[in-house]
Picture 1: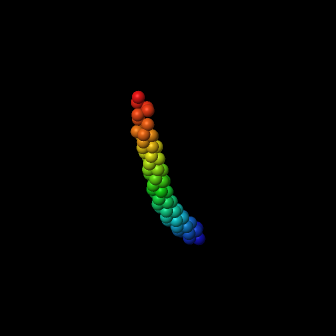
Picture 2: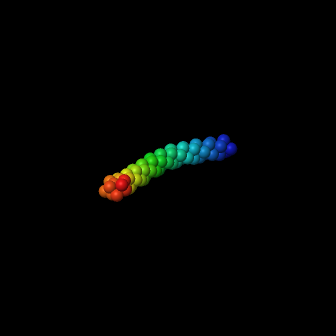
Picture 3: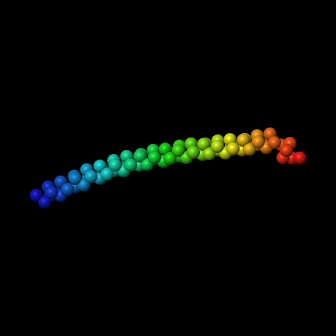
Length: 73
C-alpha cells in the first residue's frame, strides 16, 4: 500500500516536472520573441530619429545657403 502511494506520488512529480519543463521552454521562446520585437522597435525608432535629425540639418543648411550673402557680409 505505501509502495503504491509512493509510486503514485513519484509519477505525479515526474508529470509535474515534465509539465514545468515544457512551460519553461515556451516562456523562454516567448522571451526571445519579445526581445526580438523590442530590438526591431528600437531600430525603427533609431531610424526615425536619424531621419528627423537629417531633415533638420538639411533644412538648416538650405536656410544658411539661401541667406549666405546676408550672413557672411
